[in-house]
Image 1: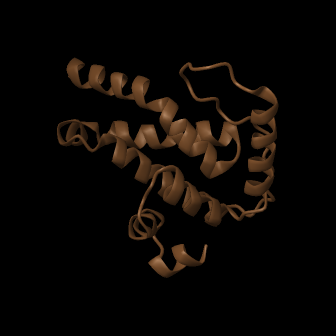
Image 2: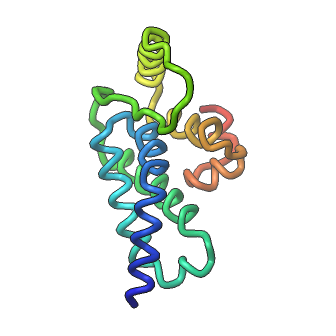
Length: 150
């Protein structure tokens, strides 16, 4: 049993940053993203005994995140705002151009704020996670036509 717990702990530590980036793009808010990832990881933990052997733990967690987000959209009809900061990617490289990054971040934030939550989810799945229309439709529980129209 300790091995299962250790494997789950390792999964959480290594995959949480990537899951948080996706969740932030889905929710538009850092705190909501953290809640979404935490809820998805809790469900993943409950199913860990069957997931750790299959190698599908991350896919399961991401699908759970999308389903939770869709159900949250259906429950609450609150006007959205995007007060959080975009998470910075890890890694090095040459010195960043902060003015360009700030401009790009503001442009992206303004564009995302104009989209509905479902449109934002389609963008995250199609372009950030490079999913096909069929995969995005399956993950969101909608038809391919709905994905194309978003």
